[in-house]
Length: 137
Image (tube, rainbow, N blue to C red; front, side, top):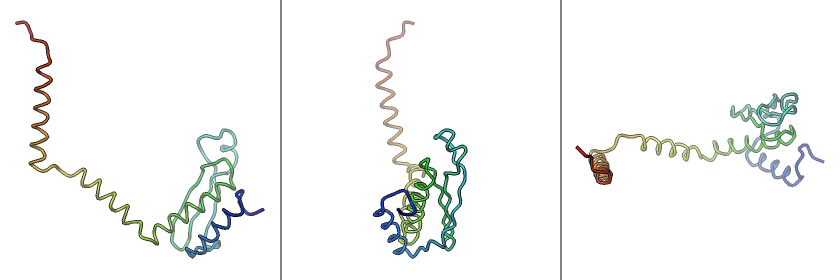
């Protein structure tokens, strides 16, 4: 049996991925803390939450997905490798694109777009006003 409560195939895939990214097990600092949330007495008494820090890059990960410490250790390693891979392969560009998209959405409307929106609102309010019953005065 391996170091984690998963199949040997998954463990071998993790080891291959670590080797491909150039991550050594010695570079990973592992610590355990108590989880919070669902899980009852188990998460309150047992340190099942796993925190990993990759010393060379400074990337840190915290995992408390399951109630088993061993499985959390495996999942945390996968998350850590994902973050390191993002840094190496430049997936940061995708995150920057997402930030730019939000910035564009928050940007002030052009005069033409604003006038069109106001005209549509006025047209819609006119339709609603026509639906109102006639007031007796």
